[in-house]
Length: 240
View 1 (cartoon, helix red, strand yellow):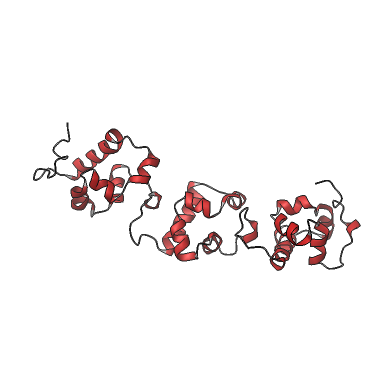
View 2 (cartoon, one colour):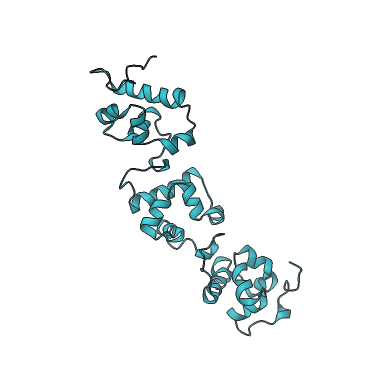
């Protein structure tokens, strides 16, 4: 009954202080509703605050900002974009890239290799950055990441490539880049390691099957015509 006055349709004059509002918010979240962090992220917003009779102090002391109110209760425990409902006009291109950088480097601490394994529209949805991806990058996760880290990633490096991404020209471009720039293979090294397994490792299995009928030699020959014969590829006949 400690907060029964606040539950009335009209709280008494001078009832609210900022401290009392924060105390009641804490009680509502932790005792009345008993919300987990994830549950709070899904429901918290102006509508929820109004339902729980906290609109008046929100306007009086927190400039109408639900996030500022929650931040007063739990400093630095939530990010504004984590909530299901972000404020109108919250996103800008610069803010979206800042959030993406924070998520990759601080929250998840992903290496280059780890990022290529998980980064996709599904990953962006999980981390609440789908909206700006749609608004500013035409729903292309790669374009968004390329704005953050220009020329640091190739689209084919990712485990998840967009539907319709591969064509023969792009596949050969990816193969050439992998051999000559990423791996910097000598001819001897290339002939020793070039196999289906190597192509799978470098995310080139899909175009290999689609355009060269699963034949590593045919793919390599398309890139470097008549430079190598099949018997020069030491790993070609391994069971993979």
